Length: 352
Image (cartoon, rainbow, N blue to C red):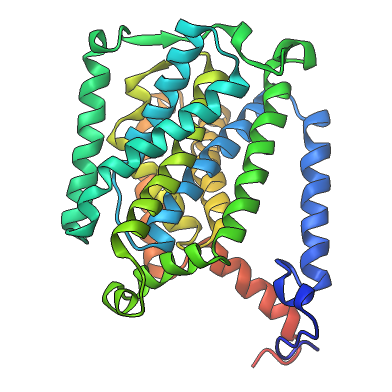
């Protein structure tokens, strides 16, 4: 029975998943991810793509909030920067997706670092208001689209959504083709962020979260690492926004309002702060919950014809109720619930 962590070489000490049950779970998840699109219809592929994109944005926000302790209510704005910068490059310059996504991500990282400048002097509620101001500034720029040469919405040419010259339609239906792009980006994001917090930079982020004054005393440059946290978080928000733009084909500022920022905060709270896997769980939960309620309303529409008119209120109520229940009964989120399950079976029958 495992009763501690005892490594005998550096390779085992540096392994992300040092024990065989962990590696087995990862292998099973990868097999499920590879098999899923061949049997799923377009509805489930659309949900899977939405979850993957949301998970990338949630991981980015968790870097800032969960790992670095910097409150942000501007994630929707940074998603919009990535989406519109990728859309403008595709629509105006005919650049392909494999160029617009990384360029938009880097540009969003620069914008995030700029709006992160107040983080050196502000913290807590004051920093939250500063990031809210960033959200409103970005929304104002987008609603006054003439400044950027756009109208109420922006259409992205389908021919720009290609991978190294191969059109997405040549791979299969758009949802099937985008599945490999979104899941591939999510896997790369998970690998990068998981390793980030084993590095000097990641440990500096965590030190700032735990006690910024103590971190400064031991030599952590607060200004540098706070800006780097904002830039890294915004990079992944920009990636999620750019993927959204190419996947949906048409984007509008209404997709990236303050409601979107609150939704992403709910994802990392419900999934688990300071956890990469928790970000994925939260993104899946908050994406599947409205879909479940929609299917439930459709199934009950014969018996209760008025239920469809109440569906938006049901979704909003379920959204708020989920946050309240998790904050009361499991503040550490779904990832803690899953950890409890694993610990139960690992220690059984000696659970005490």
